[in-house]
Image 1 (tube, rainbow, N blue to C red):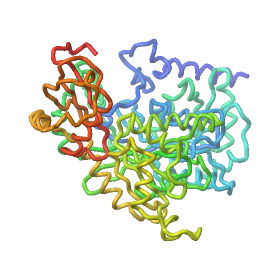
Image 2 (cartoon, one colour):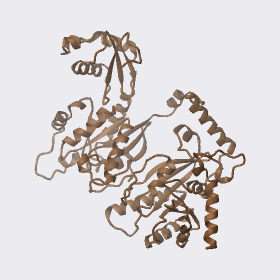
Image 3 (cartoon, helix red, strand yellow):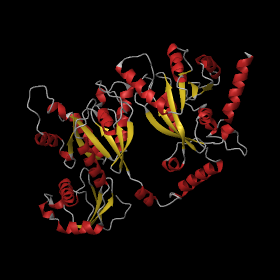
Image 4 (cartoon, helix red, strand yellow):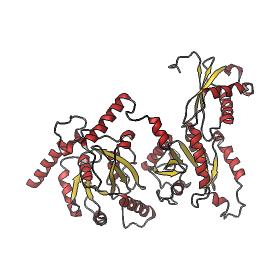
Length: 530
């Protein structure tokens, strides 16, 4: 009893010192202890992440449903991983970055490991976790502190100890001080560094990060003065709204721009297979089971001086077809990643053809302003290795049929590929490079007005009361290309008028694969008035 009282007293003292738990209430002391060097634990932003060194890589592993993804989200500061009560939600490994005391940490979330399970999905999850263990400099094994110690925990602990890498044990779901003494029961796993945490509330996460940076074998630590300088620069940037360092345009010219490419489509059309083929890795789990992918999986690829971040999303299906909460959340996350991308690869199964669901998904990409490439996958199954006795499919005829179902994507190029064999990938890469370039194209106002003077608007089938007089035209934005017409009156452009003008712009300037947005404004209309 006395020993438990001492443990509770010590945990209370550490919790009071922990900056993670005081971030909303307390201010920094003049002489902070090692556990209170940072009062606020904040997610890293791009400006800071670009300047701080990566201290090392941390892999989060454990059995299913112990809170690994919750801890991962807590460390990276966003809902990057889908979290729910259903076990086995996470399957592919996910990457993120955590910042602590002026240092960056690369974090890998893995699926629940069951080493003896030989089923396809658990075996693939185990394979993905092994890759994460090989990449990591330190490992955190997460266990559920509210359940009894089980044989799979002992087996997994022995497996992780054999890696020879620094290993920490995080006893999760210790939401109250009364529960923390029970974490000592997990000493039987033989892991020396044991820390009770609550990934849901954040209790103990600061101490976990302190121990991680203490055991990671990285190079010279960043000096405290340098870390303070980085923090001060970031604060000044936030206040001024402009970076303090060299001109950002010069930075963009020196480094190739990263194009985010979302791979979207119905379940089981080959999205994960295409990601693996484009990246040349086994990054995503592939199986014949529809709905295998849940979390969005991304991979960075550099090719011909261009940088692409491919994002494999979960299969999008109708609301009535999703039953499990994890499936519903995966569809929401897929839509979210689509809206954050530059280019969308809309995958269509060549065997099944264009369906109503394909048209709906393509409509999501079109309405969100993403550039679109229509990818007809599994083309080999209807041509060279066709087994139903029918003649091989004709590409021009198939494209004509596809465009008849996707009339609103007349600007999107169509590429025929076979992700399983790699056929057509070079054509896809060249098309992707062209579309990404066209999306960022900007036309000068002089060129636009010279083009406008040559357009015969009498050819546009528009009612007279909907016609407007255009004084001049300018491109206001890129990604997607956005044009503003300055007209003689405030009236919504007739759809036929807008479509005619869009076709004329494409004929003159291209913009392959990118939607064109056209807005009109009366010449004397105030800017704030819509």
